[in-house]
Length: 517
Ligand code: UDX
Picture (tube, rainbow, N blue to C red):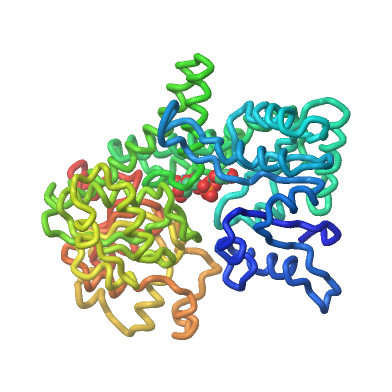
């Protein structure tokens, strides 16, 4: 996109995937991706831009035609053999390297883009030296730090670009060539060069430290719930220390996604292989706390429902591992739903982007902790097209993904728009001590001056805001109507004013708070 003079060809042995990339229906959904692919792939006549992005399953001939090759294959956790469940499986990296070595007739620069264990470049070196003797294949490490949902933004405006290499003249020339590609849009001051092994390790280290911060704040969420402290206030107090910063401090039901757990466990395996058991133990605890958090959340829901879920319906709002994606890999929803099913609950799931088939596939693939049959998952989990249907007759509504869609900042507009007077009906208007503008316990700032006043909002504008209809949800849930907010999405005062009982991650339970006052 930023280097229209460079011809880029994406190759894959999977022809169906390549065909999808050539079509109008791209196989990956990411905000902003479509327009970039369309401009680079199809060109822009009006702007005088010719196509420079191509897709092909003719792997060998495209390898030979290339001057620079990125290896961007996946490195999942090994499932069998030595290191199973922990070590990163570099089989795809190895086979890509063999392909490159066998197809190359001219010198090239080979770039590790995949997240790999520290030392992987030496595996590539051996393969190249044995299979492509006499051909100069310089190896660079250039890990990718983008996050799903913000991938294009992260790529266009990266905090840094990391380039690792050996220090011989040929490798340094290769670094300069790759630096020129990035310099088309990234200021050179943000392009960091390091040795090859530092660069490989830096990607793992960054992901591990990000995951560690989430496990740290989640460990505090447990202490807050037991003591009366408020985890949002704690995160604010910690995050304003400029040495710590305020990112990755949102308490949650546990981190998910394809990277954090895999990369922490890969680091654990590396430390074990290096005979550093204390280091391995230290990092393993990041994953242990994450698993503990998911169990803790499920236990708290079960306790709130009097330790019996038999035949009770529980609505799950959000199944994706984070907002703005349909990705469900390692989502905390898996473990939490399976624990609730084990208590014989009936589950209704609503997620604005995850399809029913994905929900079932994801749960069925990981059902080990639940001793039921696959068919029990299908019969006891219902996937709904909207939140109100999912919440109908639910004894608890559990928020597991931080979709903006679930926020409560439009509840008063909804009330006005629907011309309902739920306060009068339920007699709750004066029962609480909080008003829509007095709440301090939510990620939602209801006093936001940018928020339009209810009276100015038309029905059409209201519909465009696309928030779920909490007013109707309050009417259809089974009384007393418990909402468990595992992501700090809702304003609990607003929901309490609708007659709901609200429990939040990192805040003491409403019942405990009553007992202690
Ligand atoms: C992560 C890294 O951020 C990225 O740099 C790397 O290249 C790939 O792995 P990603 O997994 O896409 O990216 O998402 P991220 O936004 O980091 O969130 C990961 C998980 O942590 C999600 O489940 C998210 O909900 C959770 N999370 C994130 C929290 O629980 N609290 C937070 O404060 C931030």
